[in-house]
Length: 382
Image (cartoon, rainbow, N blue to C red; front, side):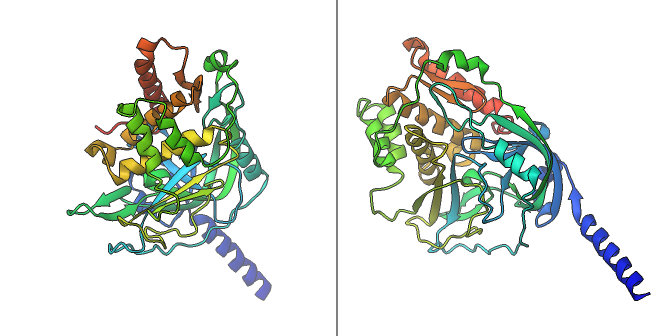
């Protein structure tokens, strides 16, 4: 009799645990991320791992960012993730209140589905020229994990202009929801079509890095332009955002695959910053080979400069404008290095030295706009 009762209790507990997993769509979660905060959810969608993206998305959600950032639990050592990433945190010396959330831990099931999922999303697309952050596959899957949600994402300044909060997840803290992965199932691969640019880039060989400090190389790129030109100022501004060697300016640079929950997973970090805001930058050297690292340094440097010292209100508040300006600087860095072509995930060409000189500005602008539009989850604010 006691064994029978024990079995009943076991089945009841199992049913209770299963019932704790809430089924939800991406759009339902993004409509009110806070209502799912801390819950274990099951969600289906398309996952991509681009240049500064590791997210499950649904372009039909009608949000400024229609995606949920994806993260592996700390210590996973997975291969998939963004090629470049910057996390924002209030500095330890910032007086703003920033309570640390109390979250339950997540253990990832590294079964064959997860291994397939991680392998597909880390398979790079290999072609002529530089394809920055290009992955060969996107993946449709069913994901279960802990959902972390906030009402508003990004950094906020107080009335005096000081940084008062740094909420949100993912690159630049722009995502209002994050899924910390627990299990993966129903994995289906979709090969990205790069055929529309392959004929243009096939004869463009990848450029090798000259070695040395990639930030110094980013500074050097500015010297290719007239020092009084807007191009020189824009490229130098991005490089200068990292500060001088040995300077403690709140910008931390690390190398690895930025796909796990940060060790200090809170709005406030453990280091000081001159203006109270930390920029934790991580670059994946396996995906940023040769001159690609210098392009990434220029891209992320533009983000740092635009957040720290915005040139316009839009640059401070709008994710679309932040990405547009960073890609503009990335192209200028490529031009300075006499790079023939530059392709982005999805096969979008944003630079081709063979374009007629009179059309280059228009072609660059069109390429960036097409890339941001085709990404499927990022749109302009109304």
